[in-house]
Length: 317
Image (tube, rainbow, N blue to C red):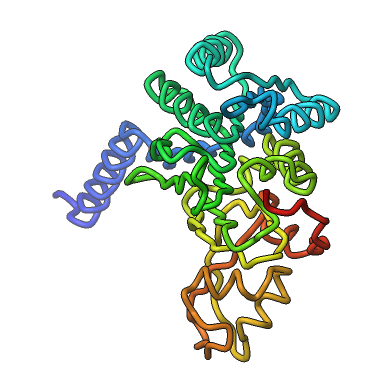
C-alpha cells in the first residue's frame, strides 16, 4: 500500500529540485551599467593678443600748409612704437587699396585718422574695406568735409571732432542705420579758440589719440558692442575735449543725483545732462537708466581717471 505522506514528500523534493535547476539556468540579473563620467570641457585658451594696429593718417587740402597737425600726430604715434604714416587725401583710394592688401596678407587692426578732406578719405577707405568684409578698428575724423558719408557698419569705433559752423569742414558725420559699434561726436563750435586750421593741432587731443591707440588691442575683448550707447555733444565753450569712447547705461540708486553720478564717474555734469536730455538739476528716480560717457578703458578704470586741466589753445583765425 502506497504511503501517501511519503508520496507527498517525494513530490515536494522533485518540485524543489526542478525549481532550483530552472533558477540556475536563468541568466543572473545584471547590475545597471554605471554612466560614464563626462569630463568637463577643457578651459578655453587665452585670447591671442591682437597685433599692433596699422595707422593711416590723411591731411586735408593743401595739407603740408594747413594740416601739419597730422604730421605731428604721426611723429608721436611713431615714437610710441606704432606703424603710422601720413598721406595726402588726393591718393586716398591708392592708400585704401594698399591697406586692404596689407590686411589680407597679415591681418592687424586698422586705424584711420583724417583732417578735413582727410576725414572724408578715412570714411571712403572704411567703405572700401566694408566691400571686402574687412573691419576697421578705429576711425577719427577731425573737422571732416561736409560731403563725408555716413559711418559704415564695419567700423568698430568712430569719433568725430568738428565745428558745425565751419565752411571748410563742418562734417556732422552720422552712422548708417543699423550701426552697432561705438560712436561719439563732438561739436566744438562754441569754443572760439578753435578753428578749422588749428583743430587738428591740439597736443591734448594728440595725447588722447595715442592713449586710445595704445589701449585698442587689449580693450576689444573687454567692451562689447551690445552695451555701447552713441554720444553726441555740443561741447561748452572753453571746455577740454575728452574723447569718450561711447556711453554706457547705469541704474540710478536711491539718493543719486546727476551731480553725484558725475562725481563718481569723473565726468563733467554737462555731459550727463546732454547725454540724457535732462537739466543739470533734474530729479532722478531709483531704477532709472542713466547714460554715462566712458573712455576706451573699461568703466571701472575710467572712473578712477582724473580729468586733466585744459591746455592753452590758439585763438580762432
